[in-house]
Amino acid sequence: MLKNNSQRLSKYFSLLAFLIAFITTVGLMMGDQYGRVNLLYLLLIFVFVPVTSLFITLYCAFFKSQFHLSALFLQLPLWPRDWLDTTGELQKAKSRKSWLFYQSQKIALMLSVGALAAFFCTLLLSDISFVWRSTLLSAEHVFPLLQAVALPWSFIETAQPLMEHVLSSQDSRLSTSAELVGTGVWWRYILMAQLFYVLLPRTLLFVIGQKQLSKVDEKLASETLNLDAKNTEGEVNSDQLEMVKQQRLDLSQATLLNWAVLPAVLQTELIAKYGAPKHCYQIGASASAADIDIALSDPLDKYVIVAAWEPPMGELEDFMRESKGVLLILDWDEDKFQQISPVHLDEWRRFCFPIKNWQLQQLEALV
Image (cartoon, rainbow, N blue to C red; front, side, top):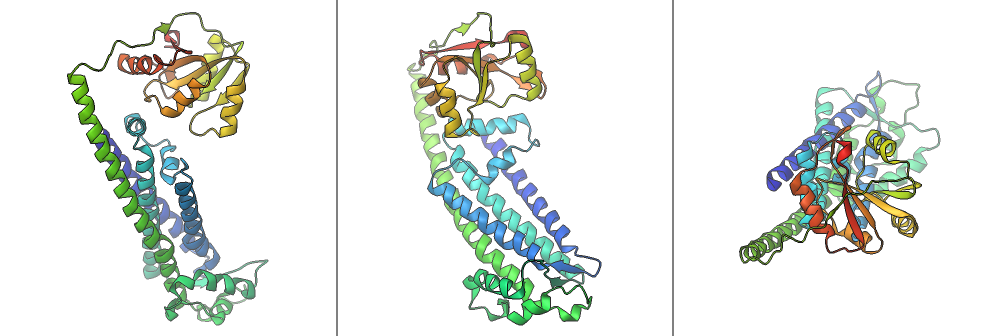
């Protein structure tokens, strides 16, 4: 099931990336009433956005950041819950980071393929000329920038911009004649930019990500075999479950911490029933180190909201070992609370058992 859902997500990520790039590029390539396309917009989408995203990817990989393009795709409200649960299972298996890195390279490649497909389809089907217009920039400003971008393919003369190309492509707004605009060099320039700034580096990163993910999967398979063997020998003590706290919940003198992102309407319902907390902080994956430090230093009783269907994570355990409080186990579907699965509850009870300064509470009255 985990493999099937992750493959579905991967497939639809690629399809969505292709469609986004294709539709966006077609929109830019429509041009004005005379079929003129602003060259600066194309440079933005074909050069500067890919280069910026590549630098961000390399920066995040070097500093081991959790930010990935595929993580942004996961935030879109398009995917079934059981597919999203896959990422939690991947996190539990310690393969989520490798999977997100691999998917990010795949998404970047599909964005490039979609943009190029739209670009050449539009060129084939439409009479297009390239112009550029700017209130602040002159040809003397634009030409050195274009030359700098073209340095990686300086050996291909037919894809190198010349000053006369830049001058002839400048939109004077006084003439609509396409004969004044040299278009031949620009489509080759755009193609080379995609090749050198997206296709080549992203393909290399894609191969690296694929190998890393394969290693993690092999390690996971080996650990699973070892765990099955331990289970067979009875070495796993399933009776070590934290007791579920039954006391009446009162948030009015406490601090509420969101590890899971509880929808606003459900948080309002929770507060209406159990009181408005003194403070409320976000401590999940989207929280900064400063946010987590503030939450840790808060002296009030801490209540942490976690989603029942998400597997416990190491980052949450690290936070809990530095503080004390109560885990509020909640399950919901869109804007309605629902009953917690016994399997999910037992998993959280098992997780909480060795952390002695934390308790577990299930809010059945919300269902």
